[in-house]
Image (tube, rainbow, N blue to C red; front, side, top):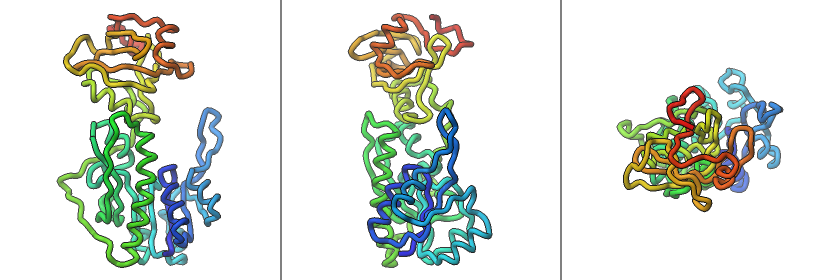
Length: 321
């Protein structure tokens, strides 16, 4: 099949590689422009650009594809299908109508649940036990098109958003190949989404990583997992940002202290902190301006004390020192 592929981040790379391995004629890869990244703000190319270059595929980068000029470019290519995987731009209607067999999206949730740009994060942060990937025919409304195929997978209790991201990227690539076989044969299902089941996964903000100690133990633990690696879970230690890199479930049988209170210091398990209905253990941390360290190293260097509530903003002194 003649395919125009649109994608940008790491999530899209396995799908692009699978298309090439399966022998499809990828006539164009479209991705976003290079962006400043890192402390030095040097330009960094999108992962899809690097993958397309390595595969020897024709590549274009566009700040926006929603121009008459780009539509004419697509029409000249006469693609059978446009494949979209985490491209990062909403496509206007005449682009979706350009390919002969339709525009297909690979989405990292079980639609109609978790439409939007951050489904992998929110499915963990809201405590879901299961997720998956969906392929669909794209429609004018974002993530609202007819479903072709879905594939489910359980979420491991200790799985982070970053780990789930990698798994779903690989699953989505495999499901895409199955989907294209059905589309090519003219047997692809078209399953309307149940509007009553729609939920949304909005774009994450840095503030979404802040730990709310008043939440229940499961919710606090899921917040840490769901924001790893970005935006990263954090709290405040004596007025400075403290990154929570890893945590573990603690006691959830009943509340034993005030939210944010240090209950236990254990060189093996870490720092046990009271939450709304129990506790969580902080096991790996990164203080402001320092490198990552295990909880035992943090205890030795920063000397937190049992019975105190040091996890407070600089303008909140109610927690004590």
